Length: 343
Image (cartoon, rainbow, N blue to C red; front, side, top):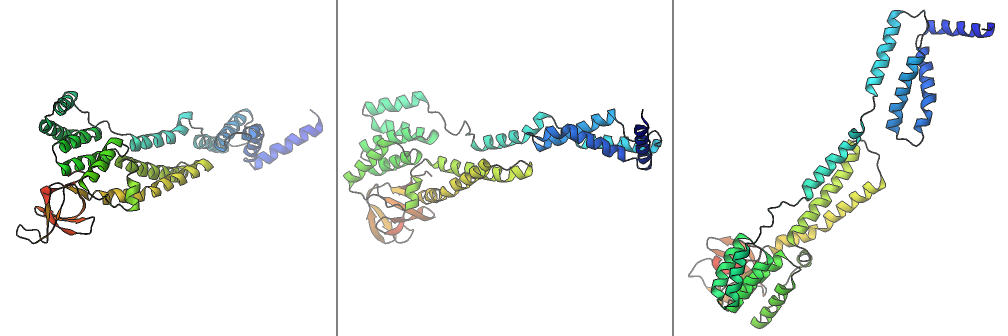
């Protein structure tokens, strides 16, 4: 070894003997040079973890400090390196997917429709009602379909029930059944056509609805609730989860969160319309007396025809207070009025 090289080594050894941490700094410098290429095109967390692994490997090859270091200094350095490796140890790959799993489970629990939401219609009972209707036994068909509508309410059952009631001359019950079919399935063309024909035949006015109530008829009732709930929780998740799990914010997350909030806000008028439309009902009996007070001996203000739409405002005992389309208001018996959303 040349004299100059030997002198440099002696100076370095004396400096490391005076300052034992210089060996650690040299090791970190070498580790940084080896891991610098890892920072290019990699995520910052993975590069940081690999950097400290490189520090550990270089420390094993080039231990810092000279031979004159004390045992206590070497023990301190070993504890520091061990603590450094334990803190910055890279996590397994599945760890980074855990937030995605959590978000997927939450969204699935929000959007998954329970299997018992739509009950199945017994085929034999429906066939029995159809045979009774075809044979002209409309009273038997009404009994079977009424029981079936209570157990398994559906748009098709209410549509057939309205047809049977209309054949018997019960205009109020028929219009109520078709309105309930429209409540469950606003896309049904047959109940809509039957309602238009029945109102023209009975000379009944078309119900006057507000703009938000008209918007609520564009989709089924349950669909509006699912859109509002899914939009709200998707927006909340994409707003809070990146900060909780320290994800890098992306443009698509903010765009999807804004879309979720917009969908939730746009469904609010329809939800209000659903709430107000739930108070609508149909007068069942012909020439139903509209009373001034909820008593049997009350003064009769006017008489309402069967099938006329009215809005329920309050109830007391066996009477309900209604307001019809011509702004006539009064009390009628509860059994003479039926809500389109069901009792």
